[in-house]
Image (cartoon, rainbow, N blue to C red; front, side, top):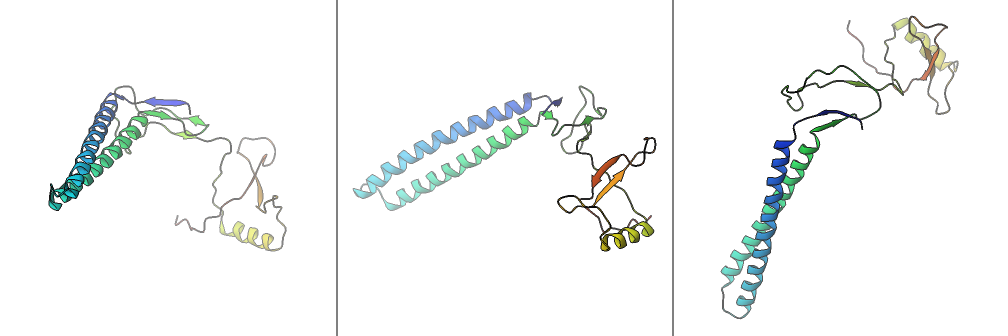
Length: 182
């Protein structure tokens, strides 16, 4: 939830204002069309207007309702776009360097602003050679692996410069069946 970047919101605020105005205009038109439709229906009941007039009023009313729905959808999109002008951290983690500076042009879905790495919990990805994989499968089938309460296989890892043998404990929650071609 911490703010990371703020993108100029003025064009998006203007677009939202235009969308709000279109919704207001659509509501007013729908209200008028509803009143016209009711008046025409009353005139048809007194044989003072034709069925064609009522059909036209019904069509105008349906068109006004559809235009109002479109205006409401445009307003929703404008609200979403405005919300995207404040880039917030989606989770707790460590932020990398920024890739853009104030004044740089940012293109949606194309410009990397920064990266954020989750550190708690941390996920470890590693490749296993064939000999180790066969050993692990054999010992698992013999029931020699320690599992956690939810039956996940437990393991220990360590970084090259850490004291002690594999000081960090974890569980395996996914095994990919893909073979690395290199």
